[in-house]
Amino acid sequence: MAVDNQALSPSAKQVCIFLSEYAAWLLGCGATCIRIEKNVDRMAHAFGMYYDMSVMPSHIHLEVWNRDKSDTYVNIRKMHKCAISFNINTQLSKLSWDVADGKLDFGGALDSFREIIKTPPENKWLVLFLASCANGAFCRLFNGDWIAIGLVFLATLVGYRLKQVLLESKVDVRIVFILSAFVSSVIGAGCHIFGWGTTPEIALGTSVLYLIPGIPYINSVSDLLDGHYLCSFNRFVDALILTICLSLGLSGGIMIMGLKWF
Image 1 (cartoon, rainbow, N blue to C red):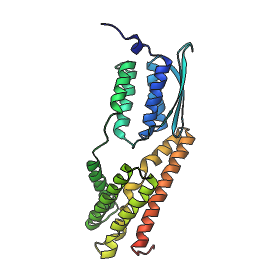
Image 2: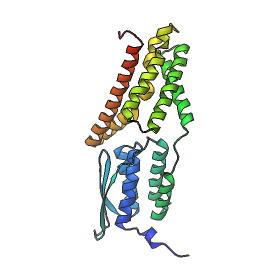
Image 3: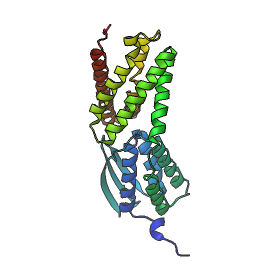
């Protein structure tokens, strides 16, 4: 059986292109900078290469070289834009450990990577239902009554579905957040308008919680603690803008329903 020497001893160019693409996918899937660095580090050393990497808000800058620096390559890869995916994120992290543990050579890692990035998104109807259940649970967590929980479930169901449709139509995400928050808040105001239940203010307040960009906020803090200040600031500002858009939609819903602010 012939041995593929190229798979056993990849060039700096091959490793650099692979790792920069790998890191770009991790960045797009919502990984923190420290996770990207650790995953790339363990694979680069497993391939017998040295590297220097800069993680930027939307780009990966990577240089790879061999032990005696006779072979070196530099590559800049733009972040792969996709929805945050814990599934792909986890699979990519597992891939790095498989390489580090010697279970995969370069060729195997490349094939595995190509299969991972083909992973289809989660079933949108299941996500819609679970998000609605989760937001209803938030309402209960804040002591909302069962009427409020049911209304929040409905508000989330409609608002999240609107979000899915608009994002599939390539509408700007900021507009999507404003419109989704507006629709959910109008439905969530039903307890106020019709006098249903005893916790109408909780129903209204929790009807838009599914839009809170929690992962970007958490990643921002992680990047800040790890010293990636540029990425941290970028993620924080992105999350802040989405929160402002959420607030605008909520405020619009309150105003159009004629509710008092305080």
